[in-house]
Image (cartoon, rainbow, N blue to C red; front, side):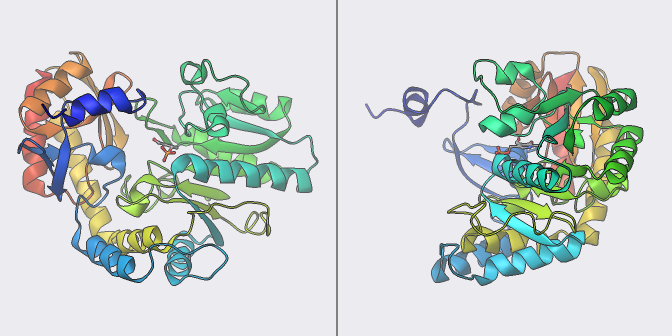
Length: 387
Ligand SMILES: Cc1ncc(COP(=O)(O)O)c(C=O)c1O
């Protein structure tokens, strides 16, 4: 008998992921089709990657056209999709330069290297510390993991990269850390997604931005999950009214193809010089063409829709039986349930909806353009599953 894909996966892929019992075979928009022919409304959006759903028309046209020209060319040559994407990102963020990589962790590694180099040149070689938040998540590579404020994820991987210091969302702890340590940067995940969809408080973010500006400490925002329209603005920092020195992003940027971006402002744009950083696949024309097609569609009209859909979800879920709390911003929403989250997700799957978890919560990261009909239907099913 032919072995099932589930059997082969369980035996042959590293056991790093707990999986839902669904083999994804196809999909369109916010509909996921399983190999056994079932349809699901997707409230997880491929962990936030399928930001415009699956097979978005403009995205697919751009990817197909680019694939017929050049999928790849090395960074030793100029390529138009990378240049035009960088231009679009800089114009829309009012930043200066971009380094492209392939993932969120790499985008953060790039930011960390740049921040340490900036601090060593401007303030002295001893200014290496980077402050991050407890319960933050910055990726799984050794240095991104070291930046991550979750000791359970770091367990067993010592020695980690030195120089990361974790604080709570607390202005006093921030003040203390800044006075005790030789700080190069404050690196913030504005809404800690993996940590349980925990938005940072406005007071803390304002204090961090002010302190950073005053002491020439770099402010890095990790917008791997919150970026590309997810929070109802192109980037989440706009909602906090701050100007970062470095923005990192990934996930939704490629709309389904791998790409990470580290976006540098005035202070940091010339820090990384020739030969000091690189990525073979970074800036590849295919991912860049895909990302440009995504960005062009993240306009005011779509962002207004994101905010309306967010209000709708909050107002439908608030006060429902079985729901303890709701957190988040835009279409990045955490739902704390009375029942165990796995039980709720199982019930959702049986009723044709998929979503994901963040710690003990249900996490919703639907496509920004999820049709209203599907959104309403899926939220009704989620409410039913929570009861
Ligand atoms: C805020 C944040 N930073 C970094 C990462 C790591 O991104 P990647 O898995 O693409 O390396 C993630 C992934 O979930 C994330 O949510």
